[in-house]
Amino acid sequence: MKKINFYNFVLVFVIIFCLILLILQNAGVISGNIIEFPVSSNVSINKYLAVSFSANLSDGILFGDVVVLPAIKINASHNYDGGDNFTSIYITVSEDGNTAVDFCTRADDALRSIANDTIELGNETYANSSLSNLTIPDLANNLSLTTSYVKTGNAVGVGGINYYRFWLDVPAAQPSGNYNNSISFKGVQTGVSC
Amino acid sequence: MMKKKVIKSLKIFSLAFALMLIILPFVSAGVGISWDKETSLIPENTKTCLTYKVYNPWPEDSYVQIELSEELMQIVSYIESEAKFVPKQTSSENAIPVEFCFKTPKIYKEDCLLFNKIICRQDCTEEMKIYEGEVEVLEVGEQDVKGGAGGSATAISVSAPLRIKVQCVAHARNYSVVYILIALIALVLLIINLLKKRKQKK
Image (cartoon, rainbow over all chains, first blue to last red; front, side):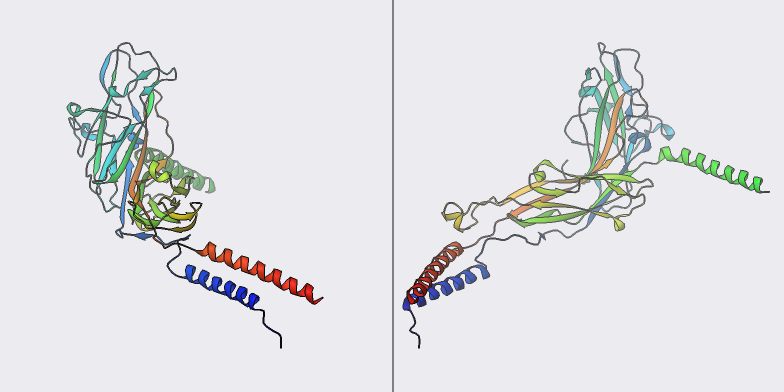
């Protein structure tokens, strides 16, 4: 019978012992190397909302040709061309929704020409309302556009409409040219910040 | 007889086409978003995907693009960047899923014995890191001002709030590397010993 080498026996024991410890270490909760994990959520309520521009708003906000300067509070082309003088610049909240909507509005930049002349944003103003007639949205409530989102329409209900009117001031010394910028409208769930 | 039929068909087609031209300017595409979670708790150093749904209950087809706010973009690893076609009259019930994936960063400090990486433990005493932002669905299409004479182009979007809470996973010190190292040393010594014995026998 072969004599067992004590030294080898100890080495084999050490290897097996280490492997057992390794398994124990990683089999339980002790390990911290997690790679994939299911997402846990604390909200399970489904919310949905949809909005749409009126045809004239999706075409852009137009101010036409300005021939006399300075020009103060020029009306956007569609400010009064809806039926009964209401504005045809509006956003509709779909009936296929389950939450009221706040609207946020911003411009990307001042109105700028190809020659890089600008009409400052403070000159482009708007007013909004949940109803429209000859006087509403009212020029008296006009506010200047800004480059960061500002709440405009508030709590427009499912199936509701948010009406807008836009005006533009053009200073006396404004160089001639076509001036453009881009205005974004964002619908968010009522109460959520822009 | 045949000629009369063709003329009649042409008349109907012309009438339909004219009607379409009259109706189309009053119809505008829109965009909708549907979501069922506003907060997600995700362990650090973990990849996970979230699905939002887009729909278009309006009578015109639209293309939409999904965007995440700046803070969420710090941790996003995948987002469908191409514009998605949403057919007209797509109701919220038939909303189209859009997926994006996050990989939460490893942000919580570990207490390590070696090289700041080995034999570590995690106590989770730091404050929970939260990435807060919004998922925005933009209608993409023509951005030019129609009508020539300058003005403002318009864009429409809808958004839903999203908070990603990065979870710290507490764990005890992990000695795996030490066990592997000792086992390897023992294995090497064992092999050397066996080889020596074999040589002695020869």
